[in-house]
Length: 165
Image (tube, rainbow, N blue to C red; front, top):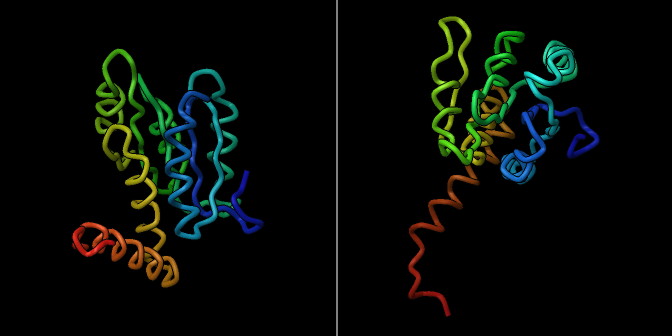
């Protein structure tokens, strides 16, 4: 499902429906930045053919960056990275047993030649920002929107709270 009628530039994928609330945070920030995206749920273990079909067709469908969220063994980002040359941003999903540390370690320990850029456990917004920064390398409009977003964050931190009525 695409956020606009334009082709999605960022694919957001999660391994389980329970990942959706966190993945929606990444989607919301990409929407705020005006970056078309699509959100899918598919499992590296339970739907490997679907993952492979989606991944190997992503570039031809206009996807330029993939955010892959997964918990526990966190195979999804690595499986996707192994099947595409597109940048993959891993988003470790917090889990009940180990709090997401298992997912984080799975993502950052990828073998040489198959990288997954990994953000903090639960760091959906940072995954979206990293995807936007990658796109901004070749897109001045995305760069301008990202710059405005960063400036708004700075103002929110530096604004004098006593000046509010």
